Every structure is written in structure tokens, then in C-alpha cells.
Length: 379
Ligand SMILES: O=P(O)(O)OC[C@H]1O[C@H](O[C@H]2O[C@H](CO)[C@@H](O)[C@H](O)[C@H]2O)[C@H](O)[C@@H](O)[C@@H]1O
Image (cartoon, rainbow, N blue to C red):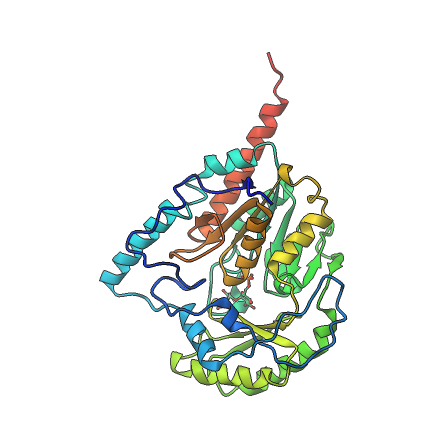
């Protein structure tokens, strides 16, 4: 496959970062401990029933080592640097945005040129992208302004929320029935409905058979981790989250041991990691990237890839699966939401949800301008 349709920033991509010694670990802000994503894979050696839908294959099982888990917990949770180090981090961030992953706002003209004449499809992560990160996962509300921006996006482009959250929860936060929702890291895909009361249509649930085991693991994790102050287990239907944002760092190791002990009884589940959260999910080859591919295909955007521009915006390690898919397809535009330099497969960057909102507003304005100029009679 050629990469001619992937939207790459118009910068000297080959240019090395000044002072950079090489590649940082995926999703560690520079300076944090190096842990590869693959080291986080969980699951055991036992064979398990894989009667999921045909395209869902099990992943190879690798037992996570607790110390690696803790290292990864630290890597994704860098402590605030001292003043001098903070200045260095700023310099590095500036170099990262200038040379590797420019701001999607600063480069909006370039983004608009790439979208010109194409059907744009918008994919949005939720936590850290549409809503700010907060200590209590039940309080991660998005602002009314953001809701209005997303509503406008959905009016002008096909749009989907792709999240680790369970669909019901994220739908209640977003409150826009006109969107597609891919919850549980893409393992629960639902179509739009005409109003909030009507049930959304299930399009795909590739991990349905794992529900009983997920529920058992949920109870076991609740029981096991209740002795760790601040730990919190969230049931996201087809996957689980063990939050450690409010856990004292000294207790991260014992918490990782507790999670690992529970997972020993569930070889059909694997462990991944997000922002101060351990995520437990079925060991199947399904992720946010696969969900994006599924949606593009089922919405009829897979026939002629040259006239479709998927735009995916996300902030977390799990969003990298979607960025990778776009890069591999040689199509579309990945935008990482981050305030620090990270290794990523996204092309562009935005700093925070406020910038995401500004970008969405500009995208809609661009579309409106194009539609009105197309309708203006030529003289
Ligand atoms: O794919 P996402 O929409 O980004 O969901 C990933 C996880 O998001 C939530 O946790 C994160 O946000 C919380 C609220 O701001 C924060 O407290 C937590 O530390 C973050 O990891 C959600 O609660 C998790 O279940 C999702 O897996």
C-alpha cells in the first residue's frame, strides 16, 4: 500500500529532535521510565474458547511481571518536574510540535487542504479529549460548549465516540443520540438513534461471550483491591478499569500484585494501561483501531479510500491503535491530545480539550464556508 493519502505534516519529518537520544517509550512523557506496550500484555497460557465472530482472533498470551506493571504505572504518571526541568520539558515540547507533530490548529490550512474534496469522518475519544481528566471518573463531564461543538460536528460529518468507557455511561455524559458510539475500547459498537429515549442499535459486540467472565473478574477485583485506599474498580461492561489516580504511589506495587493475583484466575483476560488506570479486557485482537476500521466499512467509507478522510482525535495509549490503523491504511489524520512530547503514531497534536473544541469549531466553519461557496452562482 502506498502512503500517498496519509496526511503528514508538512515538516522535515526526518529531522531529529535536538538533544534527543532516540525513541521514547510509547506514551511515556520523555524522562519517564521506559516500558513497551507489549510488556503490558496479560493473559495466561491456557487455551480458551475463541468462538467469537470470525475476524476476532485471540492475542498471544504473555504473563505480565508485576514490576513491569508498576514501571508502566510510573511511566504514564510522570511527576511534576522542578522549575529548571520544567523549562527543559517546554523546550522539548516546542521542538516536538515544530518538527514532528505540529498543532492541528496552527496547521489548520494544511488540514483543510487535505480534507478538500473528501468526505470527512470524525472519531473522538472521550476522557482527556472531550472532557478534562478529573480524580473521580463519575464526574468527568464535558462542558455545554463542547457538547454544542460536537453536535455541530455530527450535523456536518459522520461522527463517532470511541472510548474505553461503557456505552451507557459515555452516552449519558455526551447526551447526543445522533452519534455512533464504540464503547469498551471498541467492543460495543452502537448506531445513532433519533432521540435519547430510544435504544441505540447494536452494530457489533465481538466480546459478548466474555461478559460472564468479566463480571466475575469485576467482583474479584472489587474484593481484592478494597484494602488499597483510593483504588477504584470501574465496570465498563466488556472491560474493567482499576484506577490508581487516588492511590499513594507507595501502594502501587501492592495494587499491581493484587490485580495480577486476580488475573491469574482469568487467563482469557489481558492487562493494558491508560492514564493512571489499569485496564482489563478480553484477550482478543480487538481495539479502537479495529473499531474505526469496522465503522468505516459499515458506513460505506471503505470503497474508495482516496475520497475519504478519517480524522481521529485521542489522548491515550489505547488511541494509538487507531492512529496506527490510519497510518497503515495510508489514509487520514491522527491527532494526539498531549501537553508533553510523546512517541506517537498520530500526525498532529493538540494540547487539551479546549484546543480540541477550537479545532472542531474550525472544522465545521470550514465545511460551512465550502458549502456556501459551492452554492454561490458563478458569474
Ligand atoms: O478511552 P477513553 O474515553 O479515554 O477512556 C479511558 C478511561 O477513561 C476514564 O479514566 C480516565 O479519566 C478519568 C476521569 O477524568 C480519570 O479519573 C482516570 O484517571 C483516567 O484514566 C475511565 O474512567 C476509564 O474507565 C477508561 O478506561
